[in-house]
Length: 128
Image (cartoon, rainbow, N blue to C red; front, side, top):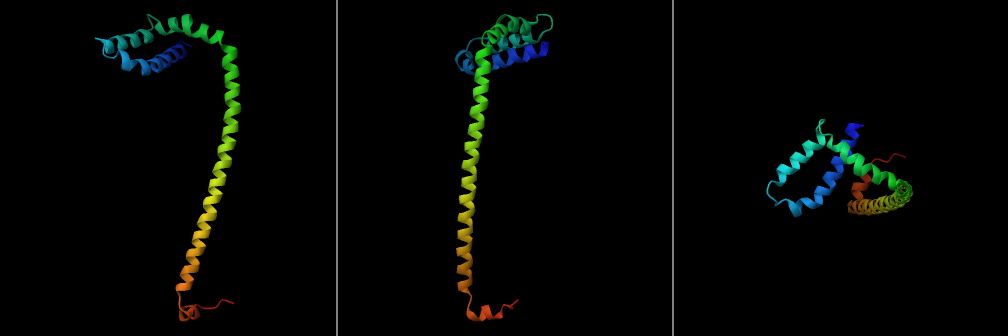
C-alpha cells in the first residue's frame, strides 16, 4: 500500500512537472529542491507520499468516484466503437490494396506474355 501511494503521488508529480518545468526551471536551486522533494516522498521516516496521498489524492478520488466510473464506462464503449470503425476501415484498405495489386500484376503478366514471340510460346511444353 505504501508503494502504491508513492507511485500514484510520484506519477501526479511527474505529470504536473512536465508542464511546469519550463516555467520554473530557471529558479535558483530548482533541481536540488525537486530532488529533495522526491527524497521526501520516498523516505520511510517522513512518509511524504503517504501524507500527500491521504490528505489530497484519496479525498479527491473518493469525491469524484462516480464521475470517474462513468467516464471509464463511456471510454470503454467509445473504445470498442472506435476499434470496430478502424477495423472496418483497415479491412477496406487491405481489400482495396489487394485488388489493386492483383489488377497491376495481371496487367504486368499480360504485358509480359505479349512480349513473347510466337516461337517462344511454341517452345513452352504443353501439359495437356
